[in-house]
Image (cartoon, rainbow, N blue to C red; front, side, top):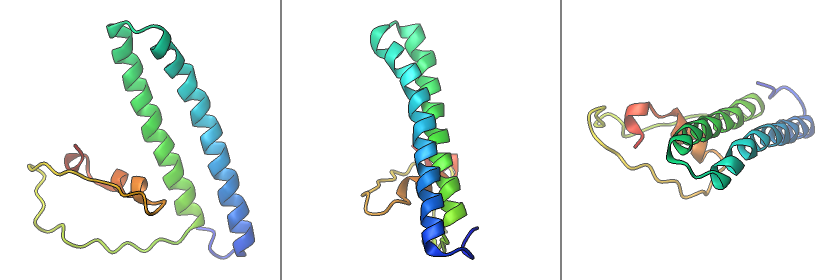
Amino acid sequence: MLNFLPSIIIGIIASFLLFINILFWVTILFVFSIPKILLPWPPLLKVINRILHWIGENWIAGNSGWMWLTQKTEWDVQGVEGLSHEGWYLVVSNHQSRKEVSCCFLLPPAFLC
């Protein structure tokens, strides 16, 4: 983590990494989303949808990475003792923080619908 640096430097680094992450993944996203729109052939859509899902996962992982690098986050997770890996749960984000998507990605796959 870069918490030892002055806040302005951390802000510049975070902004740069966010910009690079967006530029990189949006470019790849468009490469696969345009053919999806222009060629709606079901077998092709199945493959493209998997690729687009992979792009989304990695985009979020990139965001989680630069946030971890530039911000100090203290996790206080409570109330998970009664949750079962066999059950179904709905995770809803209200988008009141920039960490929501990253938090949802930290859940074990068994907890994601």
